[in-house]
Image 1 (cartoon, one colour):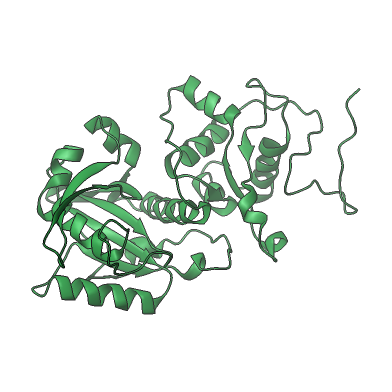
Image 2 (cartoon, one colour):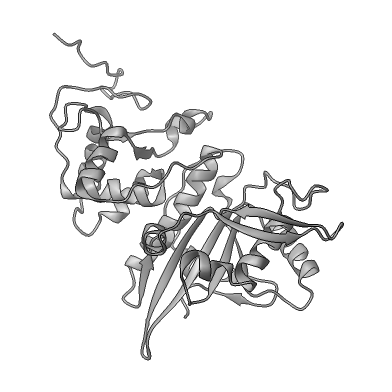
Length: 321
């Protein structure tokens, strides 16, 4: 006989580890939608998952209860609970007051593979960085879902069509030594927007770089990651049309840099202007301060799509073709 599940004094299950009750859970269409969005974007706060399903299931209370069941209950056709709650989110002093962040589990990966859905490769690097990337791309997709004139093109479709991965070798020149090096460029994410205009469909693609100010703007060693190396690599990738060969694209591509402070943005813009004195219109910048030192999982930010992005020469929103 299995032990009774443990609850707190208010009758609630533990947030940090599964507390199964023996309830049988079989994945439903909404569950598979959540799994697909986690597979596409990465770990997401519950508010994002609720937003993706709001048009089909309007009860937020029941949706949260279902997310809890998908995390806690392991009596499933795929031999385990379908969602995980990454432990990194609980390593803050105020974790109990934050909304929960979910990610895939082996059982949900198995369910997706059975349905034929593409599974994203595991991201390397700090978890908070992965969460920042996921929230940015998911926010833009959610904003597109509210529009009749825009369609979001996910990374999985771009890479599948091009039969490639995110890694691409770029040749850069060290501005100090004039030595030439080959360095792999790996964007944090790529996606596209399909603009439905009165003159027909238009397309633009984006490489995303999430910056939490953990890397220097400059480095004496070109081998070390820095924003200067970022600019040099994207110069080869964008201006040198490397992205066209890499991703089999003919439409233009821009680079979205999301930072955590306005001060950091201005310093990055200053270095961009220094390296490109005649202007650079494809490096765009915006601030999202939710991803600083203290983790507080945010709600979807639709302004990522419609708010102005700064560049060295102009200020533009993404939703204008």
